[in-house]
Length: 91
Image (cartoon, rainbow, N blue to C red; front, side, top):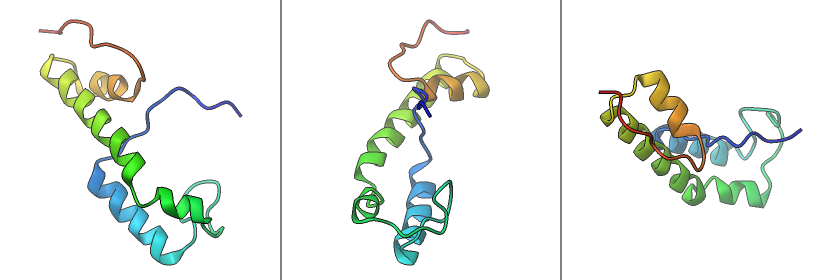
């Protein structure tokens, strides 16, 4: 299955809450691997550093699009695209 070129970001406190629950339980609680044990690598990812970068980039892009006059739906779509530039405002 090919991965889409989409940034998946969350509001950081939501991701942190979900990951803290998974690290305590030491099993996947969502998605395809639900119920399977976390590997050391996956537990390390859930420490949050790498995801934090994507989350902040996504939030920045969302707020930039909203400030440029885009609707919420358009801003959300823009914030999830990788490598695109904000094209003019809608004002």
